[in-house]
Image (cartoon, rainbow, N blue to C red; front, side):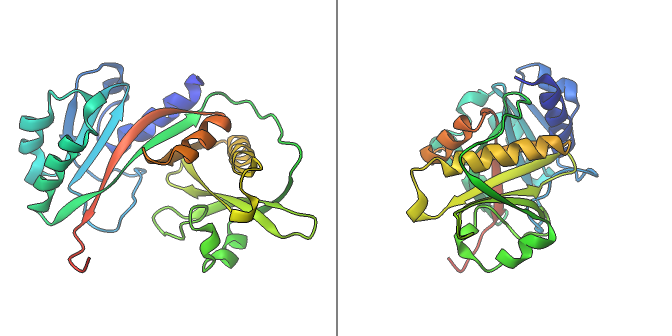
Length: 251
């Protein structure tokens, strides 16, 4: 575990959840007022009414006044380790529905184990800076590598290419905050099983560290392949979050 990286991430999470860094040093659940703080991560242009973080078995909830009292009553003493049980999420989702919101997803996130910058051999890499990434805007092959979202702009990409410069896989980093850059990756179906995903993620992780930022990697509970890529690339699980969205009545 790299303590310097963890401290930086806690600084970011403190901004995101309107709390103090010291609040992460105990396992008592915390519910704060949802507040937009300069430098906090933003994933939607819609108004937020609830954010939930799990770290070290502790739950930190930032809640709008419309739902805060309910969170205090129902979630204050519930163990963080079990917060993402479907039965619990269903109750939260039902409450959110009253205000026109719903749970979008639950993600768990990985941080680098250390600052090891061991180079990846055996693959030909091609790098793309921020402006170069625009050429892939309508390329659905790389929908995990690049988001093209103004709230978390794509800032760096790397591809594994063959001898004819054909792309076999791509990893991209989005600037989720000034501190933290998130990694996503796609590998073309014909190139699966060759270790390309982990090579890309590890290479991008190394480059982000060189640039003085914190690389992090997120995935969902059911995506076992993605979890294996994270572990193989030198990451370890640290925190998890619930993301919400406005209900789409057209679905």
